[in-house]
Length: 123
Image 1 (cartoon, rainbow, N blue to C red):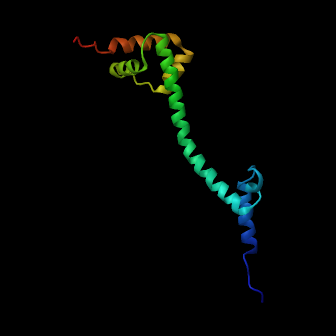
Image 2: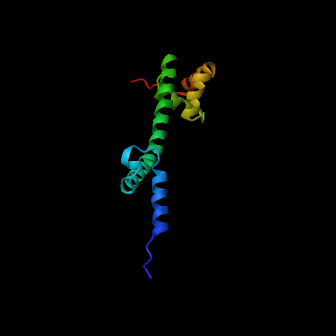
Image 3: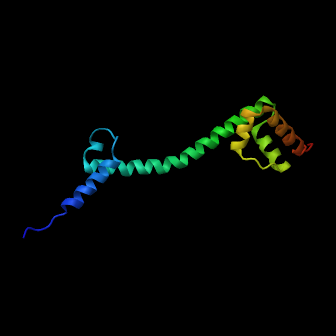
């Protein structure tokens, strides 16, 4: 009796890897070894960039808030500090949306932040 080799299991494993590598360029989508390496590397990039996207979005929101604050004659750091002092609990995503969609409400928030800000100490 001939010895059994992993015929079906090996084929299924290879097909699974190549299915995952569909759309990759050249031999990365056709050869099992290179496809497996590309899948692993792609997974590492995906994991890293899911976190990077969060950082990028926060930076975008802060940039938008900064621009809106400068249009109203204040600075971002002063505005955020004033909101915290006033007890306004809005995250940067919401502040960014308000600055874009409702400028009048953002004006009120700037006034609130400026009113809550402690007066500078005289030297």
